[in-house]
Length: 102
Image (cartoon, rainbow, N blue to C red):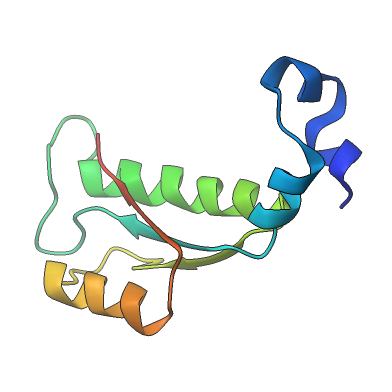
């Protein structure tokens, strides 16, 4: 996907240069999908862990389309400790750690 495909008509509005976009391509984004398993987070009609899973996976798809490398702390409803989440991101050498919560 090229620079113009990513930004389209909005590139001038955002004032993002081609150089900045090229720097972002292939950056590693680790998405931590908050809660999970025995930790449901906030509970309403569905649990926060379900919201974070749905939203985080869609976020990862969008970032992948933009050229980022993406990894997740979880892709199913399982519990992963905070320490393990951070270790996963560090072992993968993530450039950014995005923690999704509602």
